[in-house]
Image (cartoon, rainbow over all chains, first blue to last red; front, side, top):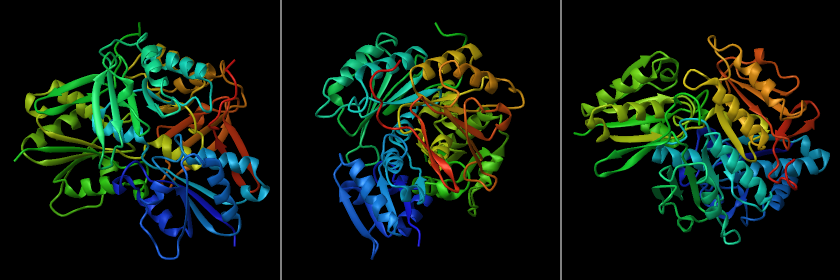
Length: 254
Length: 254
């Protein structure tokens, strides 16, 4: 019996974002690995073993899951959002690349999910309606200078920017610095969206501007979208404004 | 009775990518609008009216749906992939912005879906495992010079690049030009993924390199992912290679 490993995206928040494919893949697994709070979101099934681990232990978790699958077990690694976007899929494939040959022979499947930027964008309107990029602000795994260079490139070329991992206890100053840097390219009136814990009971959505955006409004569960110069607000009486980026760009860029 | 309008993402291909939220939103609607082949993917429900339209008629479709919702009807506009990524949500909000005040008073909801780049990435491995951008190659609504500038900015700053709308009958040369331009920044060995009709019966996945990538392999249903200089292939005996972009970037960029 040959082993199987599925890396499954749960989407953000509760089960509303779970796809049919993800639901079936979760049911089919004999053993589940993942960050404890993500595993808690998966309905229990008799006979299915659970192996929760800490948030910081992606590499260790990936290796444990691969070792288990190589025994001939059908293993699932659960991931918040989409496993391929700043989540577990790359960790698992890093472990495959550096691991024993037997791991390459496994039946490996990645099951996509709704990533946080899509859920936050949908709540706000359609801020990702035109060209955009997704950037992790964490300088744990890349130099801060490279993050600055990417922010410069993205903003000056007119991409809408989704910021993942904007802040953590060990990284308190990076987000304010990013806002300052983006202000060199973008007007202070540029729309900025803070989406916190989208799809969960404690969800919070704030629409502000680059000039008024404060880094202290963000925490580890926040996804931030910074508009381009085309991104617009539609005011609505008694409702939050809708934010969207039009599909058309008139003429050439400045 | 006040009107409601939901813009619903079906994900690419068949129903495996449909989320729980999208399924419920489709069931709740009294009238469905959308491109005919997308509507055909939604299970029929008695008493639910269907208004199919052509692919090119986003603006007309959006206005018809809003007018219908303003009559007090619960209307759904269906969209392939995610409605907020090069799809119907921005069209609907453009129509709201330029339409009568009554349209702003509607209860408008965007229901996210799996966008093509996430589905193609999952099939290939984890090529979007680090910073990436999504760019439409269509110069119908923006000048080609701006697309070139964005390709330059994204590739030189080290983003992985997902190309939407790579080619159409009216836009035959743009993709080859984009590959040539990207070759100025990236090695000819850079992995390139062609994902066609992912999730459908006629799905096709090709992993090649920037040096060998041929624009004639793409059609309107193709999503292309061009790696960064960190993107790697894991060779596997008797199976297609896995493509992934590691989470870590060592040292500074050249």
